Image (cartoon, rainbow, N blue to C red; front, side):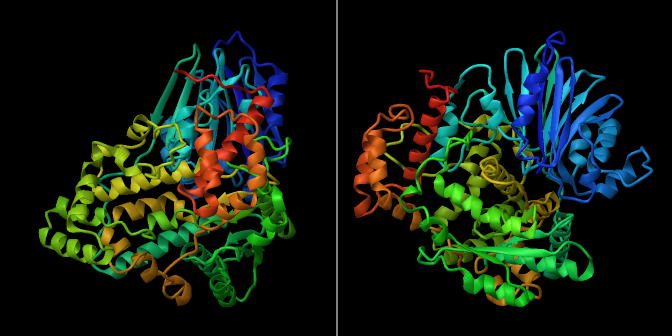
Length: 628
């Protein structure tokens, strides 16, 4: 992923100092190691740093200056041919992605954003209207952060430069931290009140004088419904849509590394990519697999080995337990000072893990990593019966509703009353969408924060009141995935670009438009996926019943690091009385040898937040005062 940064002053007489722009650009240099450029015109400064990952990107020159507009673009445009054929501008040579996007904006204005397929973020200066526009893709694969000051706005691909170069001390965003303990922080929030993230499928307009406008450019079409006369029709279309998505994401100018966990999602991506490569010449597809022998069910080798044998090629393997064993008693130690992060949640083990992955990528020269994120959530990896039941009610299919109600009750071992409550709850989500993305019910008695108030953010995320039950469920999933992407690990070492085939917008729209009983059935998770790919993915993997999820490691780390943790408690905790009750947390740690009374992951999070706060205060970046 490349990187964008810039400064816009609301008063045209207030110039952007070159030193300020250079400092901001320096903060993204490691993310974009392939050079870049910048412009500085009076009250506007824009910077770009490149990470080339497609053949076309090597011919880009950014910021791109065209009559009436200047823009920087971090992205991969997947519907290049469609845009090129639709815009009126004619190109003498093969255009770059950023040239096509510039032509699209000049043709359609902000309406062009809904036409851009792929992973992208954009910062655009409209010289005719004297306004700055920030936007990113429909689900937020490419992130963009901004900080509004008294005299202007600064933006950046990552938040760290915005923190380090803030004109005054920043303040804690309690909604963010409460979200940390209740699944995830609200979309768009950061640990700092003054810094926010651009909401996926939205654009922001900043005008002279300080006016700020936010608008949504895309939401799911409630009238887009796909119906076939047979199961085979759904299977054929799904294969075509998913194949096209993988094909888009293996457009690269170097070796591609695909994560191969041994699960259905990653294995399917690898098998589809191999099938495409048999028909089309392109960069090689290598695999990277992880396993953890310290976890009772953490040995995934029997599963990803099946895929390696099937494709006739052995990939790279990383033993997680060996990586972490090298840290001995330093696993939960804070990161070294040179690794400044604008969010908590990272220890020395995070750095060790990042280095292990980077070593593999550097050996192969790979800059692109394919990930299976989203497959579980979108394609029925987690059984959720409410959309199907609610669909039947809306369509008046009472007979099918009753049969499905009994089948789901038997399969899921849920009472009919509970199933009815969930189905009607989904139907009412158009009036209360917060229920679709409600947080964890786990209670930590030492957490002082209530669940975050994200109702306003969720309400503006999409057109909830126009959606049917399946579409509302899909948009709830999109919000959750977007929140997860907003919390993805920062680049601790090196840099590469993650691509997510299951998060392709065409895949998402297809899943939201087909009947829910095609996606998942009472007796078969991932029904459509497994039916569609049965001749492409080995049966042992495609129909495996369970997938490993780590559970032992967090508790084991707490017990192993107890001497270090007690040293932490010898010093007053900055988070005590604001975010947590440190005394109660210490009691929990003392009882960990007899089994935790609260999730050990929450305890680790509290420790990382405290370490993060101490680092922020030591650097003079944070004002710990919070509003009453």
